[in-house]
Length: 280
Image 1 (cartoon, helix red, strand yellow):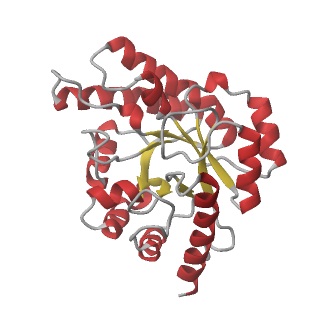
Image 2 (spheres, one colour; image 1 turned 90 degrees about the vertical axis):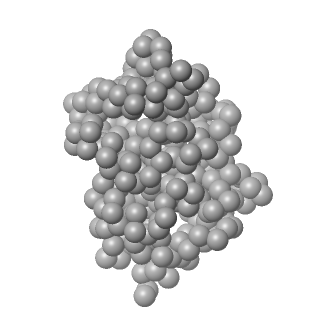
């Protein structure tokens, strides 16, 4: 399959200021969209803490102006900024986290975007067992997945590395979670930075995830832009496309050496690697 006919390359952009370091672009939405489009990206993955703070009409107009699509909506800022999570011992907090995900669904439906479940899963707090945390996580995911299915939206659950959470680090654990939630609207978001830490074999894990891969994040081993570390992205993309994946490659990396340089170097490197992968 020729993936260079339409390289679906996007980059993560926050609609508002945020603490999360691996979002390169934050703040002035229109200025950032203009730059992203100018470098040749065809999409922006929007990191949105609270969808009620986003003016849908304004967003629509800007996306049309810069000919950009939105493959996915990131929700992790609800954890980073507000500590909303599916695994909180406080039922009210868990319910607020579920409501927040549900509030993302209308915008996601309008944009034909996935809703990402990443850091909003939370962590196991002191005094709570991991078993109880997983019970809370599965219950919240089932409620969100049911609402997503009604809205015609899919959720992409992201395995994260052990330094960010104690819950669901690997493809194998992600697949088991999908089995337990048992919802057609739930799949996986794989991220090369996290996989480099947790997976014994990145390419084998990608192939095992197969059709369950809904979305794909790229960052190099040091969480800089692809090409700045030691990951072999040609092998990674070969494994990814062997699964039949035809969707987006989305850059989520540190703004290093600065946001503009990282974004520009990333798309140059990714375009070259993907073109090379296709010519072989």
